[in-house]
Length: 204
Image (cartoon, rainbow, N blue to C red; front, top):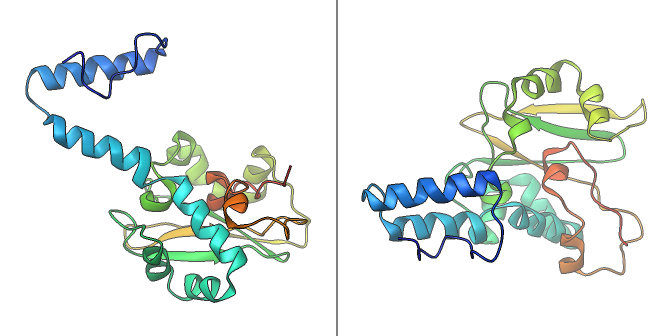
């Protein structure tokens, strides 16, 4: 089992958590508790098929294609499926758009509902009870801790994800990006900007 394709090359030092994962994977395979083909499919899914790169593609397309942006705002689930992104925890999507007057951020106060197909797995802080409580009670303070300072006249709207609905924030397109194409714009979109705790990056 040591040659299973998910194991890192021994030429590359493993972090403590990577080493634990490697040992757990080997143990599960040795005891025939996990089918290697299934494990391959799961790893491939989370490495290549779901994650923030998918969401960045959606956002960048909405920035350059007004017709697509309207479809995304009217029926996010269908518009995201147009891009080929769908699956578990992405069945009922709503897109909320940041503007100069409104800033949106997303939380799940009950657990950690999260749009896996476009954002991948939720970060640890998103699942933390402190974020889940304070994002609702003091969103500006939370944003400040993430480095986002908004003008006092900007309204902050907090959206609570549930098992029925998950949200994607469409961040504002950064200034001075008119010369960038869609692929270049994707590089400015971070996972955190699609949760609403960051702004889209500025062009280099």
